[in-house]
Length: 329
Image 1 (cartoon, one colour):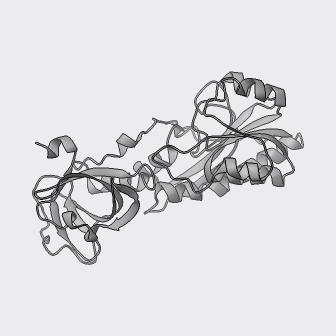
Image 2 (cartoon, one colour):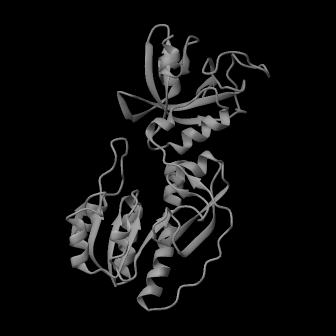
Image 3 (spheres, helix red, strand yellow):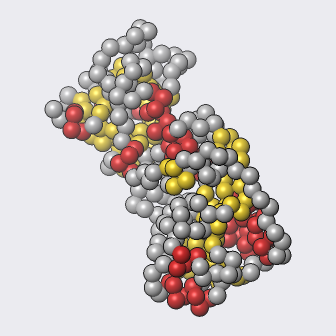
């Protein structure tokens, strides 16, 4: 088959390898660059060029000159992997077999956006991946293949979950391509009846609200790592207000508690400094609980990871975390 691949990141590279290993013709790879807050390990465009393939960069494949280009190629199929934008019918109607997208939930549950983030934020124990045929709805097309029951570990992060989902997705692509290429009928997939929708998330959604519980804050930190990174603002009497990215947290109980905090009930303003132990710095959350911050980054260099204990403004009884507007009052 002649397959156009619209993809990005590691899953795009692995899908490209799968298509080539299956002796499929890939006349065009369409990809795009990471957002300003992202650092991608895999460059699909560069990798495809090394393979001698034609590459185009855009997020709007429904616009010219890409529509004319796709029509001229006369593809049998279009595969989307790690593609974030809605593809309209003037694109998926071009190939004779239509177009398919990989979505990292067990559809119809988790339609929409940011599935890795939401799976962690909601505290799900398992998730799945679905390969479905595009239609005019959002993640509503005919399901071609699906893998269920992929475990979400207790300390899972956005990054670790995204990596975990790659191989199951690639296996679905392989299964469907072999069937389509040999004109074999695809099996009917039985899906659950539970339907839900995930709204799009933006970097500002990763600002920590210290009125939330320690569990909710910990999930937000893990769901935002390695990008866009959960963040808050730190105020001390000496250092003013600084933006801080929170990279790693830990929920109680801890093996060694902060020496300042032994009481069962703690009273104070959410975001108050509570004390330190050998692993990090403890702060009060919104249900009189506490959370340990272990690793951070600063706004001046978000790529450098710092142990929270090594950042002096954190080790101050005057330290308070919260929204910038509140800390300025």
